[in-house]
Amino acid sequence: MNEEKRIRDDIEQFYKSVKEVKGAPEVVELAIRYCRDAQFYLDKKDYVTAFGCINYAHGLIDAVKKLEER
Image 1 (cartoon, helix red, strand yellow):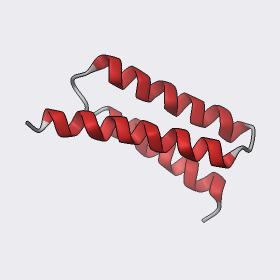
Image 2 (tube, rainbow, N blue to C red):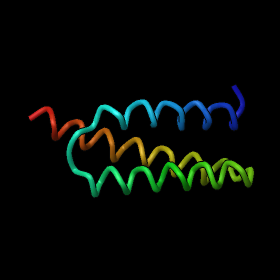
Image 3 (cartoon, rainbow, N blue to C red):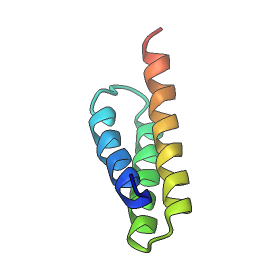
Image 4 (cartoon, rainbow, N blue to C red):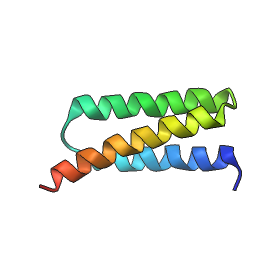
């Protein structure tokens, strides 16, 4: 799998995952901004930065999900 496809798949997965979150709207908004940044850098073919952004976005959503499990 090439870098661009991997990042596009990660962005698609992010939007599916973010729909499952109910709380922490400030954190969710921040995660969405990181996802948008990932798309921005992907469009510029800066795959390293895009990959970092989308992974940070996933991490924020994962943290919110973990808190909601409590």
